[in-house]
Every structure is written in structure tokens, then in C-alpha cells.
Length: 310
Length: 274
Picture (cartoon, helix red, strand yellow):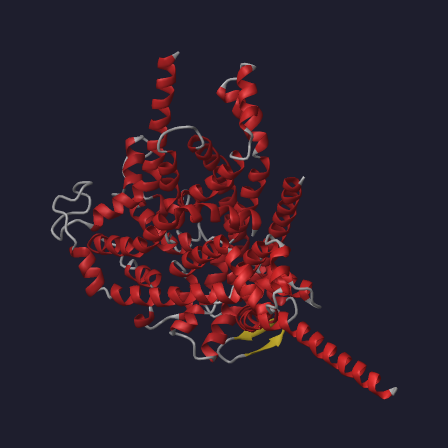
């Protein structure tokens, strides 16, 4: 009499337990393929790079001794590392103001009520969808002795004879930075455009009634409303700029005489020389810088989302 | 009053056209060089005097760009559906199911997004070598089949799907998989398109990983073929480089024209929400 309900309860519990464990397993079944792939081809190599940066690792022999912080010490004593870091910072300082202001101006222009504004948006976005390899080669042609940029500089009286900006130490980094800015114009324009379109039109109308000029409206209304986008564009530019590679590798290759060797080019050069421990240690330094910038972005982005929610 | 307004409009258009000249000019100049006939000097004139497709034919036939085109297409066509499938499968429980370890998995995935590729390219290269994946299409795919960015982007989309829709499907007796596939997945379609576009752009134009992983010219992608071709950057080769550059860009342009709405809204998806 007593046993029967107990067994029933037991069965029910068993069923519940089975159901429960199935419920536990389901999310992991969904996640399994990605976890396997990401562990193998992303997380494992990242951990390896951490390990190698503390070893005197020989990739061909596939072994290396633990050397502590010796690789980092070597990097920090290497003048070409500091040169690379300086070039990275100079590159960022060249790109950052241009990335903040030029796309903003473009966004304000195409946000006007005019015919064909969507066509202009598309045309300004074209460089964004162009493969970087193609963009780099197109600009390499424009910069060449007979190319349009060199000719234009003669026309403007900057140089007396056509000069390739990419082969001069003093101008090469700026010339590469111009490619990066050109490629990103449309992308950052769209980010600004999204915030511009969220500014209610009646603010402008009441400003017009109060007699504000277009420039005043831009300064008093538009720019303050765009501050969240400005911070976003800045942080994105810093994160992307620290990793700049293709446009340098394909136009100057880090030259002339190291003038465009950034942190990433420094890592790449060491990798090519099979000096993977130094490359890994320098990669770790780059990671720390990226993390700092990314954390900043996350903080700003989440703050922005909070603002939107309010 | 009216004339100043007209003047303003004209100035505005002049400015817009000037900017168009800067953004589109490099494409036109490259196209013009690509169309020049064999006897014509590259800098004799801006426009080609006797436009010809000879350089495109040469790129395709002699410079083996038909092969590179095929390789790139194969890798891209595999990367897009695989990344969509696997990223969505992983994103769904991370957004919608309560389970132990969820926040850890999510934190690990998100934190990998900060890691620059240059940090782990050497170990990945060694691994690909050890697995026999060098000079293979699968080897080129490694980084694209499931991406942290894809998982994060899709998770954000699933978070916005109203819970009530899924609950009513459960009441109708659907299981987790069916609810994902039949209820949630159709609701995140716009983000699927965005992720497809990001995957396409990332794979089609990828340079560094194919550069490391391919030595066999039969396995070159367009980027690598183009970079190799441009090693010999002189007058004779510029027409060929231009033609190959245009060939490499045409598919991205066509897809952009087709899906421009998604491209442009995707930019803010990737930036603000992802």
C-alpha cells in the first residue's frame, strides 16, 4: 500500500531528473560546434602565444626554454620597438582628428533635404566595401611619380617636381594615414548619420525662429548631440588604428628605412624572421593596449545604451 | 532671398560632387588604366584612347586570376552559411537559456574579440601546419566558420526577441531546437543579413591569414594573387594590376548595390550594438 506511491514518486523523480539533465544539456549542444572551433583555432593559439612570449621558442624545433620576462626586456631595450610604438602613435594622431571631423561634415551634408542624397551616401560608402588590398594598390598608383596625387602636389605648388609621398621618410606615414582615412570615411559617416537622424527636427525649428544661423545651429545643437558618436568614432579609430596592417604592408612594406614600421609591422617582421617569441611578446604588448582601448569603448557603449534606455 | 537659397543649393551640390570625386576618383582612374590598350602609355591621357578588355582577359587567362577568383568564391561561399549557422546556434542559448557557466562562456567569447590577430597568428600557423591545413580551402576557412563577433552580434539580436512568442510555442509542444529554428531565427533575419555581409567582406578581402597559410599559387585567393602580381610594380604591369583590382572589387560592388540598405545599417549594428 505504501510502496506503490513511493515507486510512483521515484519514477516521477527519475523522469524529472532525466528531463532536468536533458534541459541542462540542451544549451551545451547548441554551443558545442562553436566551442570546439573557437577553442581550437582561437583560444588555443592565444594561450600558446602567451606561453611563447615567456619562452625562448624555436618554431621549427617546436621547443623552447622558459626565460621569464627576457623577451619583454629585449623588446623594451630595442630602439626599433620604440620607433614602431612612436609610429603607431603618430599614425593615430594623424588619423584621429580627420576621422572625427571629415565624416561628421559628410554626414551633415548628406543629411540635408536635397535630391539624390541617398546616391551620395552610396558613393561615399564605396571605399568601405572595397577590399583593403585593392584600396592600397589603387592609392599606390595615385601616389606614384606620374600618379594623380603627385601631379596635384606640383599643380598646387607644394613640390617643384612630381614626388612620390610613399618613398619619403617625412611623408610616408601621413600618406598611408590618408588611405586609412579615405577607406573609413563612409563608415564613420553612417555612424554620425544614425545619431543625426535621432535629433528631433523641432529643436532646429525653434532655433530658426530664434534667428540662429546654420553655423550657430551646427555648433549649439548638432555638435553637442553628436558627442556620444564622437567618442565612439574615436575609440573605434584607436582600436582599428593600432592594428593597421594591409595598407602599410602593401604600399611601403614598413619603409622607407622603417618610417612606416608600426607595432603590427614590427610583430610581422619578427614573425617572418621566425623570431616568434619576440613576436608573441610584442603581440602581448599590443593586446594590452587594445584591451585598454576596448574597455574604454565598452564603458562608453554601455553608458550610451543606458542613455538610450532613459 | 530666393537667389541666396539657390546659390546655397548650388554650393552644396558642388561640395557633394567634389567629395564624390575623392571617394570614387581612385576607382575611375584604376578602371581607366585597366581599359587601356597594349600600345598605350598609362599616363598619356586620363581616358583610354582605345578602350579594350585585353587586360582583363590577360589577368583571367595568363595571370591565373580565374583560379584565384574560384578559390575566393569557394572559401567565401562556405564561410557565410557556416558562420551564420554556428554563430546562431551558439548565440541562441547565450541569449535565451539559463544555465550554469553561461556568463563565463560569454565573457570568454567577448574577451577574445579584443585580441589582435597578430598576437596568435604564429601559433595558428603552426597548428594549421600540424593539421595539414596549409594550402587548403579548409585552412583558409579556419577563422571564419564561427566567430566571436558573429556570436556576439546574434546574441544581441536574440535579446530583442519578445519572450512571449517563444513561450506560446513551448505551450504548443515545440522543443528548444524547434523554437529556435521556427520562432526565434526568422525574427532576427535583418541581423542575419548583417552578419552575412560582415562575413562576406571579412573573407573576400582577407589578406594576412591567406598570406601566411598559402604558398601554393593554385590555392591563392584574389588578395594574395593581387599582392603577388603587384610585387612587380612597374609600367608594364600596372594595367594588369588595375584590371585584377577591378575584377577583385566587382563582386563586392554588386553585392553592395544589391544590399546597400543592410550594408549601411549594418555599420551601426557593428559599432553601436556589437
